[in-house]
Image (tube, rainbow, N blue to C red; front, top):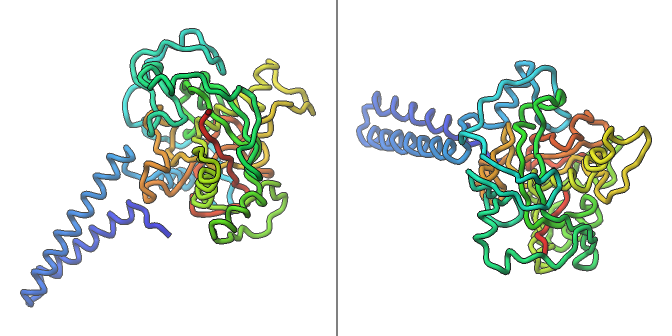
Length: 380
């Protein structure tokens, strides 16, 4: 099991103290010199690791520790661990987000899901990888080569599969949407805020349904992935696959090799954008008062996040990061990304977690029958 970076720093300084004490009191000079050198080395290593954590993460205490403290103090522990569904009374006090002010955006009158071009000012809004499928500013778009700015050939709403036994993918056009929970949302926890507007261009494709156990088994057989045991569980979701985040990313890489197109796990913002533009949240918003009792939405992604928690590629932070400051699994060292953001809720869990804005932490190396995944790819 990977060691937490904070634990490593504490161990390093404990070794430093013990080595320094031994060097001070031993009468064997060679051993004293070696102990002094060990103390100096571990102190330097611990200091570098601590500084690296602060620069990379923007905080000192890990998100998991923050949520654990919130749980123990009676706060809102918006964290999922094996055998628990998270939740609790009250609110946890979370420090202000690192990084300063909100981005200064003028959406130019574009509404939620509108693909009209906003004239953004102020902060450049990009994701951690620059151009591959998250929010982009208009200025960033115009800096791309003409071939990248061209309208994609596939059509909004088109459903297709890239290969035999590959998942069915639905194309979602680019647009603008509000991500996160509003201040008046009484069901929201600290990790669901702050709310902010994001632009997605040129859109992406996402699997119509979570990856099934049969689809995952084909990848296991081809790649030699180990079988996981999540144990028997009542009301187990139909798409329970019992995988770690590493398994899910191996499946996406396998699809990439088979199709020649880049597949990966969606980011938390992409997942929420898909729900708000193609899922049950979009249907409810269009109806004004929401769905009538017993009414079933008919859009392709209407069940997204309603019967299964789904993993994303975001490392968990106890707040919604400013666009461009997200920590993605592909650009963050594993020691700093031990927990991932999951979206949606499985059967039997608190339905507040099925809200599009809900964000929870999930230990990425712990497979759960209630946590599955979808894949996405860029529009082509």
